[in-house]
Image (cartoon, rainbow over all chains, first blue to last red; front, side, top):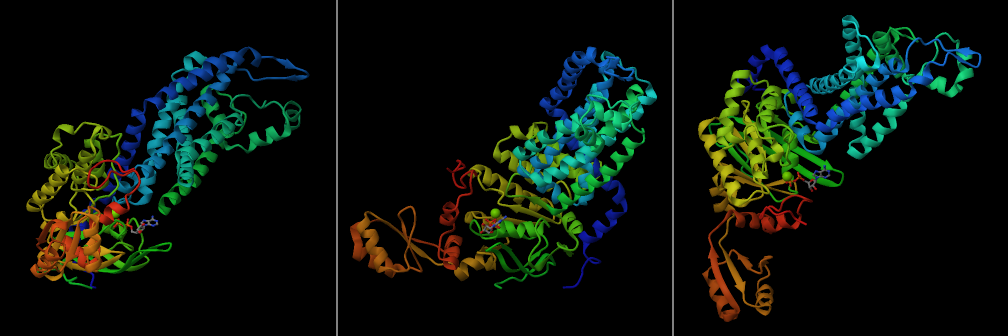
Length: 288
Length: 333
Ligand SMILES: Nc1ncnc2c1ncn2[C@@H]1O[C@H](COP(=O)(O)OP(=O)(O)O)[C@@H](O)[C@H]1O
Ligand SMILES: [Mg+2]
């Protein structure tokens, strides 16, 4: 069979259209992004969760534990965290909201497969890379919005925000959201059922959150040996190994100016993990 | 291959050669060779499990064939999937709309991912919604529509961009007679207005009469491929349909005529029958027969000749789980 590409009218039109390809791919990317965002914003339950969750953590946990946080001397060890517990936990609550929403948006991958919409996406003349990027960006946008909802409560947590810090914080939130949405999508490809995904998200979100130094500090004035007097070794090891620790820390640095680690560690780790998780998300999609 | 050549004067827009696909131990496609011409309305007719959807999925680049090649407008579906997909508009057998978006949003999404420029997109959405008579439902959430309306949205969607080939996989399955008729009316209208190739799969024989060519498939093989008239002339047989009054007559007729086919309805069909046979039957069983008639060659009889069974029996035999019953629109249990 000869290749009729040159003489075939349809093929010629397609080739001519190729000139506007970059814009076309951008349009496709925008379409996929817009769908994710619309679906999520229409999901009332998700919005309710996005508001009630931070309220719960700030009101109940934050206010409840506030009085215990400032104990200055504890045995022979002095805590030198010069912040209220509400201020301390604030960054953690932002991260928690981002985590839930990112992972939730990955459910759309399972939804698409289950209810057939995936086919519509797969027969579109759009490279898989663009499809996955659109999905991740869409999910990350929604998760970033949910993170920003928490920022609205800053006043009640006694957190004062400067404009520059807000912009930097939102940048960090987006990076985190991108990273976690990619992870969620990569896992959704493996799990393929709503139930399985529910189990996964429950098994992962809270443990990751609680071991990220988001609800209690590792005192920066203490050496690691002294730290071990306060906390069991396994816990300290887990906290150091948890990448989320550095993300929470970087965000806390922007929000209340308190860092336990190098402030650049968070963004660096998030950027690397984003690339890795995105690769896995893409690979899952290519497998179909 | 039987009559696989494209009708004269039109260049093939779909070329399939030696296509084979196996799922574990099921041979879904067994060496399919096909050419489909420009502006042709091509019907793929076969019972459930014949391999129609498998073939469609390979054409859409969703599935890789084990053997053979398929080209859409000259683009190999395995090696140039993006370019091949550009030429395609598809209505899948299974629903594929986003039920949480509105009708318009679904169509717009399609236009965006198919890179239809803004103005054309807006115009096409309006036109296609008009075609399928859903203009008033433009802003309704898809999940509020009936099954037939959803199907029409999917048809409108496949036509938003300029596809060279539009594939519809059982577009009428599970719909009531009126909706089925409407869908064929839209396709007929579309065909008069726009130049495009239509590939329609179905297991309703009565629907393929208006198509240019009919390809009958079963067990992953092409049994016959020709115009409906040619198929009738070549494989169609007049047949005698007998409605026995009682069981004794029924078994009697069945014993005397080894080629008789007992239908689920209780009727007996004798292919290749003549008036002589009618006389013999009436002489032999007389009052035991409540009704007897000679039927002109139908596509149904073409199928019967080719496969030795009725397509409808086949369709009802293996209902797909939780899918509406093909004939009544009621859920099967
Ligand atoms: N994903 C699959 N896994 C295993 N077998 C399949 C799969 N899809 C289809 N089949 C089998 O392949 C054959 C052809 O199926 P299909 O192409 O869906 O037929 P049709 O669309 O004509 O009803 C059937 O026997 C079916 O059971
Ligand atoms: Mg099918």
